[in-house]
Length: 116
Figure 1 (cartoon, one colour):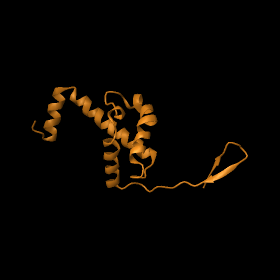
Figure 2 (cartoon, rainbow, N blue to C red):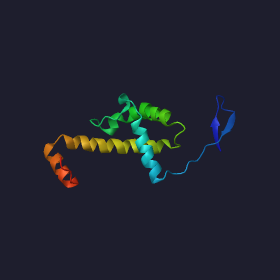
Figure 3 (cartoon, helix red, strand yellow):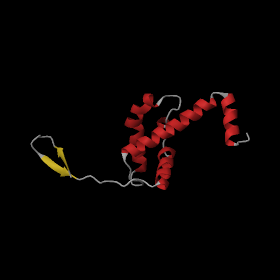
């Protein structure tokens, strides 16, 4: 149990916290998919900006909206959600940077074995 101060500094009450187990790999993948799929376009991560430029917006707006969408579907830790969003942004930013240079796009397709 954790002591949390109330309005008056002389009064305390107990507030129990639920300790969550770590997600399995399958739960993590499903959580990653669900957390980004159900967002409207104004809440998507902008790959043209660095994480440091959008992290405050992510924490204040995007994470709250994801929480509303996933309410009752998943039990997760905020740090897990933030980590997922950082990884998603890193991947999309790398793909965006790659798409800017046609020679890199061709070499990446060749590396992956893609025919188009």
